[in-house]
Length: 72
Image 1 (tube, rainbow, N blue to C red):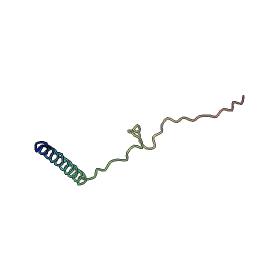
Image 2 (image 1 turned 180 degrees about the horizontal axis):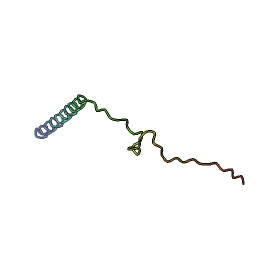
Image 3 (image 1 turned 135 degrees about the vertical axis):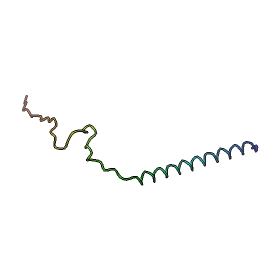
Image 4 (image 1 turned 120 degrees about the vertical axis):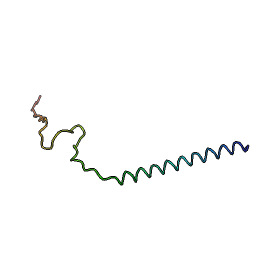
């Protein structure tokens, strides 16, 4: 191997290692920043996303199937 290829390899290795360390550091910082925020108090969430705006106790469309005796 030539000294140029060793130099390029070490240069890129240090660049990747530095970028990885910076990414981990920033991710940890963002996590601690989010954990220090006050917890928001939400009203009771809907049991399903399609039921947003439906109040508890509100009557919904009900389907009752009647059994028929068809003996053939």
